[in-house]
Length: 275
Image (cartoon, rainbow, N blue to C red; front, side, top):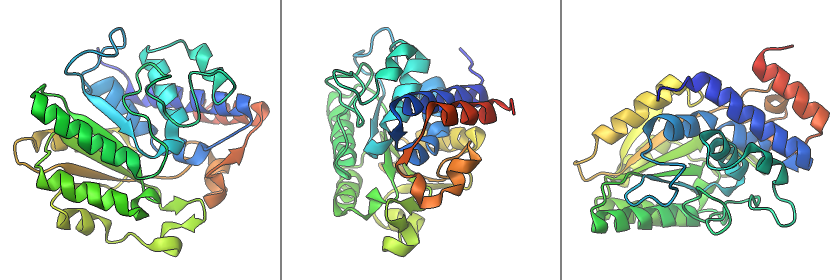
């Protein structure tokens, strides 16, 4: 099925805002910045079946930047893994949708994540296991730019290259902001592309990581890299809070933000172009 990815992105963003607005607080900025990548993966590229979430040989996605859990949930709900009504239980008692992804609680989640750096190591392990099993799967991972200051990220990067895991495609959500300030102020990552290349990775720099066409082209190029023995890192230059101007204008304060249902409704109207 061919999906209108631009409309899918709007739907995902609106559902992120709905569930965080209902809860009253959440990691809005970093959820909104990764929407295009999630839409491309789940609605265009990944070999998955929502009716058979444990399908052998399926492609898998690991959201190492655990703060973006609500974005993954909104994507899964739109893809048909579970009813959208469940999104309103986000991070509440008894929920199947905790703040950070939990593979034991949420249908469609392939790896439990949250402690920064560890999810990426898990993704590398999953990719190695897939190689051993020769199941043909592609393993995808999303890491944050603040998360990229963790030493564990670079240990995993070195290991993935050493084991020639060309079935691994990772993304960096390079919105250049983290909880304490900009990444340049806290611990500058640049030149980020050169760092990943030096660790033996194929690197693709996406100038606008919130453009679905550019993201889709990058993923296609990464998949074409299979057989080279190199894992691929796609650097997504994104906008934290993308889609809602007042959230963007908060700057680093949009990392974890209070939001009322009225604010969420107004933001949804902005995304839908109804204002």
